[in-house]
Image 1: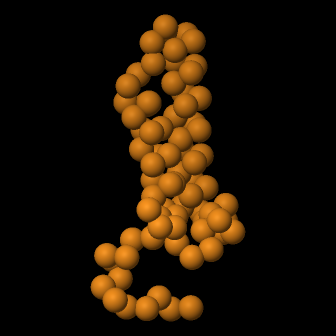
Image 2: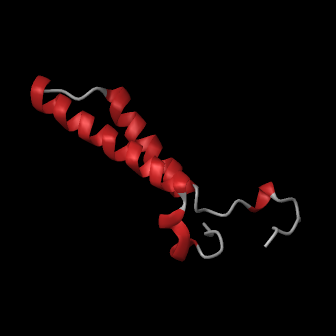
Length: 74
């Protein structure tokens, strides 16, 4: 796995990462409240949280196959 250039410096400034992490946190909170009140957490909410977290991680992974040898604009 190879990160995009400057991923360690800029990941917190990417809005797609921020929003994906927010969605993951909100899904986790919803799961916890649902488990607390009913005794079981809905699997769809847990899945949404996992996929939101995966989306935020995948945002900073370089995908060389998408560029087909083209250089990125600076």
